[in-house]
Image 1 (cartoon, rainbow, N blue to C red):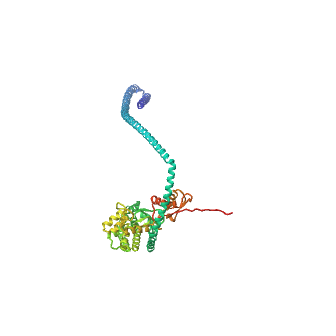
Image 2 (spheres, rainbow, N blue to C red):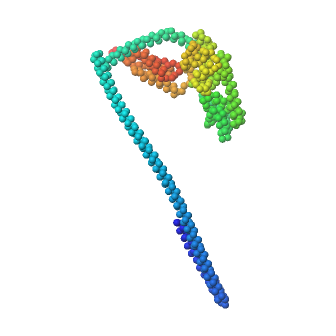
Length: 535
């Protein structure tokens, strides 16, 4: 409608302007005629007639043009009005269709809600019926419990009448007598058994172990999860990273090791849990720095070359270890497997050095007991070979080591030693027992394995909490880095016989609740002091 009004206004303005132009033209024509009459009076009559005729013609032409233009404007206005009406009708039609679709969806949703409401109502009725059933059952159970309680009360009354004691008095007397008799009897038997075992075995075992440990001097190699590579200057860091990081990405993808380049001057850190991959990355990076040609193709070439070099080094480590332990006739595949242990650690202890030490200790112990020394050294050397493959083969290192020992036709004593050194199966030979003892000696000696400060403090705290959890304990102190726990008891609550029982109870609870290497000594101290003053 606004466009129509504007069109009409424009048409009226055009008519007014046309009329004004025509009026101006007529005026100028009239003036020209008058001037002509003044200049030539003799031609006035003729010229005036012609001027009037011309004026009539011009007026008629202007009237025709104004009517035609007005008609065109009206047609244009009607066309615009028709188009606008069609657009409005089209919008109304689409909105009506959308409203109809929305109404259909709302109807369907209402139907769905009605169905869900019916389902919920049926479920609610079912739950009400089940609840009523459970209530009835609970009522029946309560009634039966009341009947049982009544029968038990009657039974207790009859027993009290017969014994002339109430239930609490009888229980207290029986428990006191039983505790007194059992405490003395158990403590006496424990003392006798301990004395007998100590008299027969303690001295011999200590001598053998002391001699073995004195004759064996082992070194320890600790491993970390990072390796530092020194650079000639800090400009080398940019060359190692490469354009848009392509060099460092290539090195990380080929070796599986994270290359950390930080603000530390002239140092690049290689981080990764696999020591073999980390060593290959270190060798590659040092070769690149020395060569100076650092690009992806060169990195790929050096990584492959160092992998082959690492295989040779693993074989050399295995051969040197086998020669040191006195088992040079090992299968070549077993030598490579043992060489891989050079790059495997357990709680910070190098597993290859640990295996060599266990083999030597087992040989010394076997010599003291008259067993086969060479077989004991071989079994001790191979007892942990499954740790070289436990990241690649499914199963524990005991299962993997046993399977490979069978595969390469090792001695049955060696196979049983590998399978039993953690107590998974029964030891069938003295050598198997000696290897287990040597394994414990090698791993449990102070300094053999690293332990985090958090785990160390937690173990001490757990030891003291276990000791103080027993009744009658006054104080407890963890000593010697958690290898001894000393317990102070209250003498008025704990007797001498109960001291022995308490030490065995604490020992049992420590064995059940804690994981620890070696042995923990439990010492219970009971002291009775009588103090008086002479005046």
